[in-house]
Image: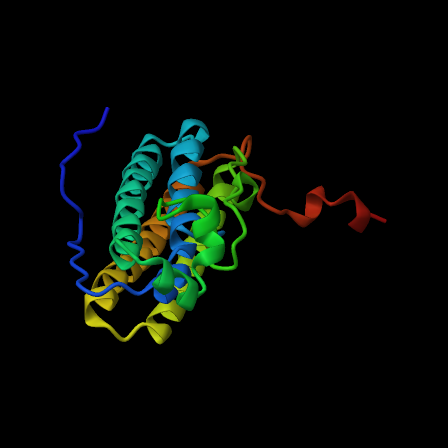
Length: 202
């Protein structure tokens, strides 16, 4: 169970709408390296993680990613709130509008819908943790790209916060990988040994 606190982890107070920027930021709502994929990845992987400490970490970070989904959702909502039809057409937001009006729907910036095939829950601790470290770096790169496009501090501030958390999560998953590598034995973690390689035997 979770205790849900009814406030954003980082405040979002955007005073000027900007549907063009909303179309960029929506990638972190439902894109391939976005917060929805991150939360589903970690909350799914925790069940087969063999170490209780790492299970707890996956639960913690997966839950935080749900909070980040809220932050990105709030940004997009505030950037598109009460747009006129003229503003929608002028900004190129009309293609999204025709299917979803101004509701939030998970997709990438290019319009590709969210797909669970964009993340993996493999059941192998090493594989899953390397996937998670890569995912955090890909999300960090996406936020870097957004920050190159966004100059409004009302938008950039929360985006920088989210970027910082990706770096922290990458570090935490690196620590988790060390825990797993130190605790697994030869029954469930194959360490390469040339003497086991039959192809090398004459």
